[in-house]
Length: 67
Image (cartoon, rainbow, N blue to C red; front, top):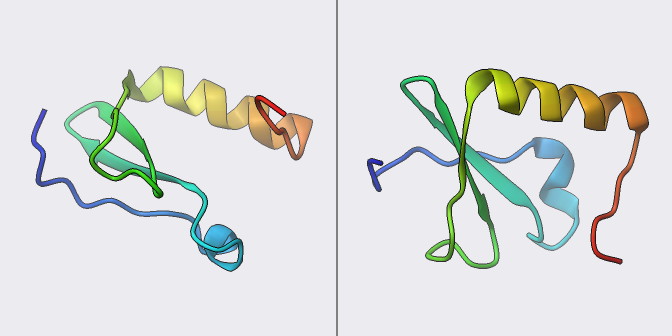
């Protein structure tokens, strides 16, 4: 995967001190990274899988993982 991706985060997440998930798209893939660790792991998902994941989060409201 191209490592010169244009990463973005939701403006909604800008008020939390920079602790957020960033996404970048290339071809039909969505890459994800932790804004606190930009050189860390970057899992990638197909567009449909990402859309299904995002739709689930939106329908279930605020979801905190690992806490």
